[in-house]
Amino acid sequence: MAQSVSVEIDLKVPAQKAWDAIRDSASLFPKIMPSHFKSIEVIGDGNVGTIRRIKYGEGMKTATHESERIEALDKTNMTVTYTVIEGEVLSVFKVFKPTIKLLPGADANSCRLSWTAEFERVGNTIPPSEPIKEAATNIFKAMEGYLLATA
Image (tube, rainbow, N blue to C red; front, side, top):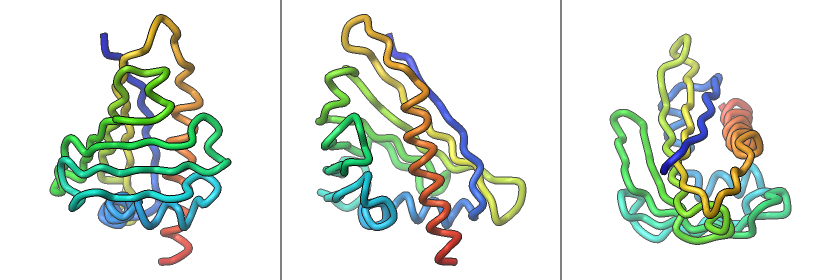
């Protein structure tokens, strides 16, 4: 049975700017978080079916690599869903499928990022959700900091 973990993060950048950064994360994340992301290789055109091969840095304590495949993409509604298809996370989860959605914020210069991961466990072990939420929050807050600093 599928379960999920979610976090909502208020960002002080316009939704379109955050969306553009997420869509460009292959080049952006290794630049702004080199301790977490050594490299992200994109195989495809960025649309459904595209594979992202991620090599993690020492800052990512639980994994060294991961491959993800984009399963759904809605550019108008700024939503992307991807499935982890390779990596250490699959030793804990049979399925790990995050969705990122950007929602309007309190004003034109802010937005709310919703990150929800649906998953199925391997075995009966229940992985703690707090480290997963913390990792997602840290990544998107670092992205926000970079976007604010380079505005």
